[in-house]
Length: 348
Ligand code: GTQ
Image (cartoon, rainbow, N blue to C red; front, top):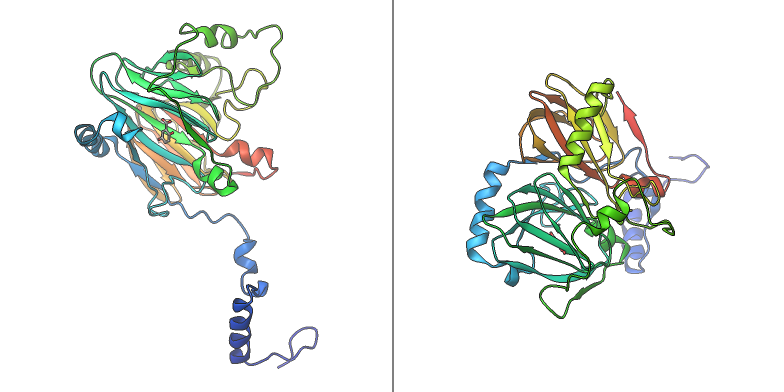
């Protein structure tokens, strides 16, 4: 047999022996792997999957009776994507977990180069402290812990408090850029009054000499304001066909996403509204905040109620149908794609 270019094809057995020799010399034949290395389109390992809060909550409460926040350092049940078993990943680039804190507990202060977000699911009276300022956590609040900032969590109130953690852990691990340090006390000292960052950066104003920052200096975006903004939008215009009424959380010093590696947004889908099919190169996670909806992700139909969490792998078509007025929190690795010139979306 003659192949293009005139080279006679060798028997398969010759090639197999050759590949073995190559392997021993730490070499590999690109022609066997090219199409996998440079695929026609994204092929995420993560699969569409929903965690029902009603099923997960009892496990969290059990964890609460088995281990303290202090002993655990962070008492978290990691949301493990079934397509990435044991990898502590909810999508191909994102880590997510549900963290529980009980009254009187402290999750000790530490810092790391991974960026984190907290999205509060239930309970009252817990706080997160970030670089000397505390913020009280309310359901629906979007709270950030910028890379390398000291942070600890505590709880002065009554009843369990649960939030979702979202971190760029897989991405930072891939880049080999992970560092962590423990603080030498359980909780860091408070150096600024609660609300200080919000007053300086969160009211459409900035300190007069404020330059661009890599991460937003606002560290709590309260749900009350986000919800009111979405409600106002609904009276002013029609919903976006792909996103509904949608707002993104921004860094006011730059106009970029609040966290440089994680893009977070909130959507309101009015009862009866369905989004048109949408996909992008970003892998995303959705949290049902209010209402009830049906999601179709990659052809799988999934009914969602308040507090359920949904993994939406990259380049997998998604549709949401709102049964009741629905509020959805969505976060993804979109900012990284944008910054690297890799961002693509497809609107059906
Ligand atoms: O609260 O600092 O779910 O460092 C994983 C790693 C939470 C946290 C996580 C963390 C934290």
